[in-house]
Image (cartoon, rainbow, N blue to C red; front, side, top):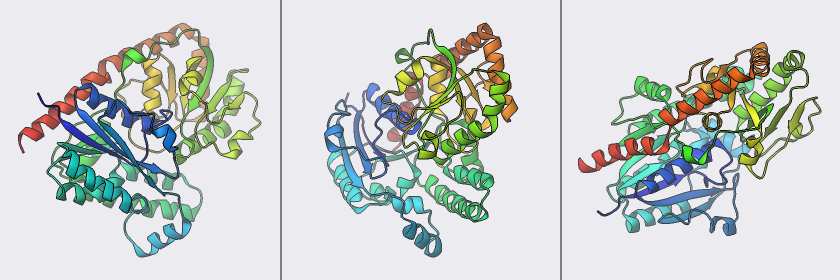
Length: 403
């Protein structure tokens, strides 16, 4: 049987595998390959997440082919202002449109002739006309988030009135852009049931199935001999991560210190701002960007995710659960994960909730260990990679047969 061919488009190189976005994209890439598909990856090597060519030539060698195009996506305030005044499109979509990338895409469509083109960011929907024009591939959109909700959440949290207005305006633009784009795809793959319900409420789309972030659980073993300390790891150039860590240290940490004297909290992430590196708070340790996320996580027991905005699914939470860690997070952090408070994780909303949850873990280590084991079982049941990818490929095969 001739293998199916899929072209996957990403708005950044999904490497290194240190943050949720890269891990989620990589899971799809590996998933299709393990199902026997020929996978061609075309990535933007953006200025904000630029990787040297000599590094790129060493990765994704297992794929049918991996190509990249250098794209300047640095935030330019004059471009933001021009877009805000003279356009109704979200500036993000404009920033990811690049003629060199478009030219390369059209070449690949003509030569590779993919059965499927999967886009890993709604902001790349500006290339849909090229996909429809060159060939007859099934067009699939992977929804890592319902993007407008991120900006809507930030607008509600920001104290500056001007930024409230800007983020609110941006949320409206992104929502309109998303709604128009969703209808143009043959299949949507939202990462959570919650995101799927939002799409269904706003638009009538052609086809949609939920495809949660999947994990090859054989690669993640339950931890052992970890230290009973807290940790957080995530890309710090994502505003929601920065805001969450800042809130936890300023609001929750003083209460944690009172409830559990001597408890320690470690956090790390790419693009760590100077203000975090210079923190001098007893018990709080900033490690900036770490060489190995796995090594950073391995000896720590309690994942703390103080997240207040954003959709999608928190990959680091799923990975922690797969490793039988204890997870303490907000309703936003756990959103999209079919986990029950008190059985698979601990939910916290207020500063005192985080302090109480940490104290409970320290006072009830045997029960906390049982919670970690329950979380591991949940991941094996709901988020195992082979099961998720078989559901996706079966759906896509059905679309291809109906063409």
